[in-house]
Image 1 (cartoon, rainbow, N blue to C red):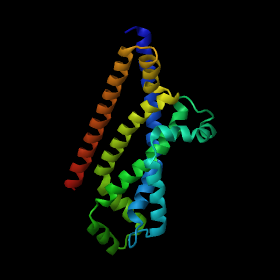
Image 2: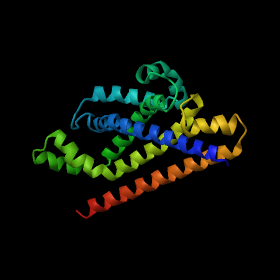
Image 3: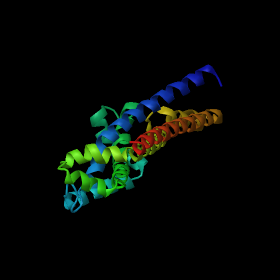
Length: 221
């Protein structure tokens, strides 16, 4: 493979990492509070609001059930409004964030619901406020699960970032389509796949390691 093609792979990898990292941060910033609310707002829970919980759940499920490639095309006007363009790695952050937010919210909800209800009752009996219970009990106790959830979200975003290349989103997916598919260069397609596999392995290993470390600390408190 020529140095020019290697440089293209390096540049495309940087674009993919940029898209995924920003979208993961934004998706977590939006998805974490939504997930916590979904996990604590049913009848009789900390922030009891069953009607709001049900409506928010419908919105989250509707967004999650929309195929990503359709979502990307459907929100092009919104993407252009936010990013000033609908193509390139910066524009791709918009659909990636919208797709990851409900996914992260449901993962966070599941992790929070795994926390022993007895801990919540104990904290309440000592006079802790709902927000104190969230920040001092629920999130710390659910942290290993939250880390694994966010790891899964980042891995999914890597796949989405490759898919968004089909509509001019840049990154490894765009490189694979333009060179590997349209120019009939199977070696480029193979290189893109290898890089994506390596990135997924790296992210998954890092997430598993952090989750194990946090879990051991919780057990030895």
